[in-house]
Length: 266
Image 1 (cartoon, rainbow, N blue to C red):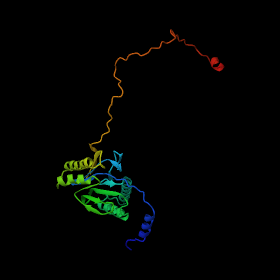
Image 2 (image 1 turned 60 degrees about the horizontal axis):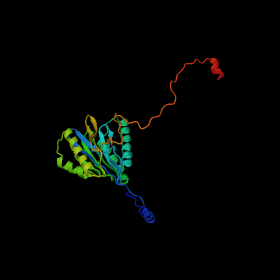
Image 3 (image 1 turned 180 degrees about the vertical axis):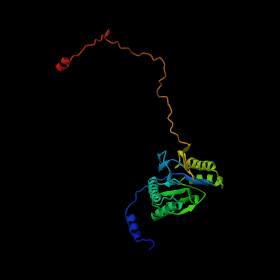
Image 4 (image 1 turned 60 degrees about the vertical axis):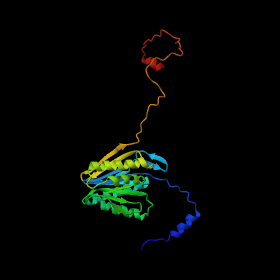
C-alpha cells in the first residue's frame, strides 16, 4: 500500500495547539573502524554527555554482537543499548536454531529495516564489522536506516577530526598493529578536538580467530587524587599545651571467686 500519511494533518494540528517544551540534550562520541589484511579494528572514546554535563567517564561504546561481529555506537545511549541487546538476542537465537555462525549481512539487513521503520526516532548511528564466511567488512548505518560499506569509517560528533586522521594515513594492506595505532590516533583526535568526546581510548580487534579487547589503550583522563597538604602527620615532637593529674594512685586489683549461690542471689 505504500506510505500512510493520514495522521499528518492531525499531528500538525496537535503541535500547533500545544507548546513543545522538550529540550534535547546534545550527545557526543567518537567511534571508528579500520579494516586490515586479517580483520577489523574498532575504537571509541569513553565519555558520555548530556548537553554540557559529562555524565560518565567510562561509558562503553563498543559492543560484541557475536564472537565474530562487533558494533560501535554513537547517539542516544538508551536507544543504543536497547538496539544492541535486541540484535544480540536475535543473533543468539539464530545460532541456536541453525548451528551456523552469525553473518554480517544478517545484522546489516535486520538493523537497516529496524531503523528505517522508525524513521530516525531511534538515535543510533552504528558501525558494524567483523569477520564471517565472506571475509572481513565494515558497514555504516545511520539513524534513518541507510547503509554503505567502506574500508574505514568514523561517526559521532568527533568524526570530522577522526576522519582527517584516517584519510591522511589509511592505506591498503595494513597490519593489525598498524591498524590499531591508526584507530587510536583517530580517536585521540576526536578526544582532543571535540568537546563531546573524552576520557580514554578503547580498542577491539576482530579477526578470524576471534576478538581481542584492549580497554584503556590510551588514557587521557585519569582520576588521580593528590595530597593537598591539609594535614601533617609527620613524626615529630608536639608541645604539651595542658596537663591533667589523675586524682587516684596506687590502684590494686584483686581476683574474687564467684560461686553459684552468689549468682542465684543476684
